[in-house]
Image 1 (cartoon, rainbow, N blue to C red):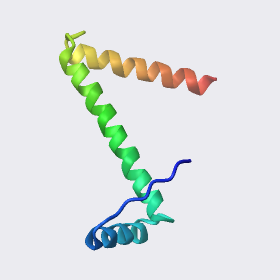
Image 2: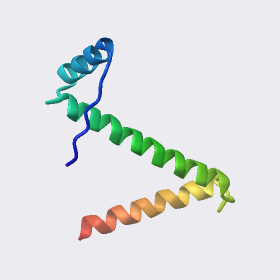
Image 3: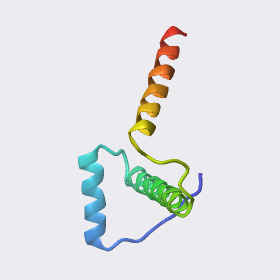
Image 4: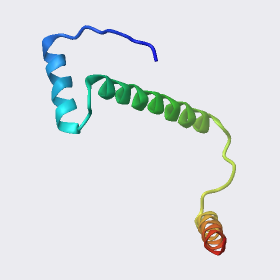
Length: 83
């Protein structure tokens, strides 16, 4: 694991220390790692949303479409219970 040192103004350091204490993190490094992971997830989700928005529609999302989705979930759930 690599090491990175950062400098924070006193107000931000106090905020980080408070978050570590209130949210149950062991160290400020754990808190910062979690923030970075969340940012990575947001960026990935944003990319997926943009790709989806740029793609052509695959099917009309009407009642029949959602009924079909529900049926697929029921079937998959039932087959997992049997296994």
